[in-house]
Length: 86
Image 1: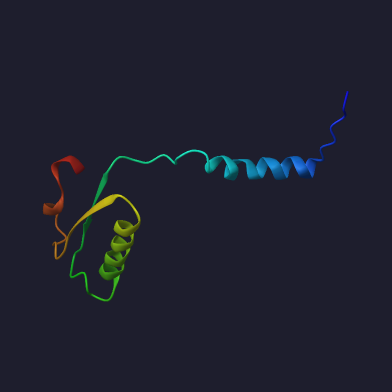
Image 2: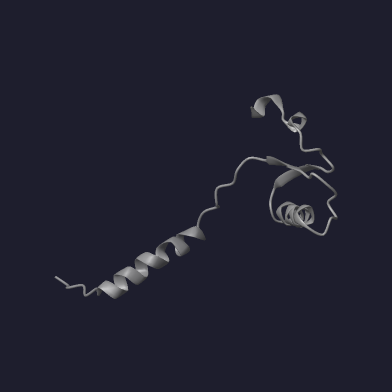
């Protein structure tokens, strides 16, 4: 019978590396096509909050399969609510 010598450090190192090794063997889970809506209360080129969101939207669309729908200059009233968002 062979005695296997395994230190705690070696075991923990292998256990920590396991998910990284296994992640290369399977495809990651992907969500179905997702549509996200962005409402700007002013112009997208306002050099502030709206423009920061517009730049972020470009990054999301470029790096994922998310479709983004946007509308600018929407007044901040109750009229922007859809019936299903109540």
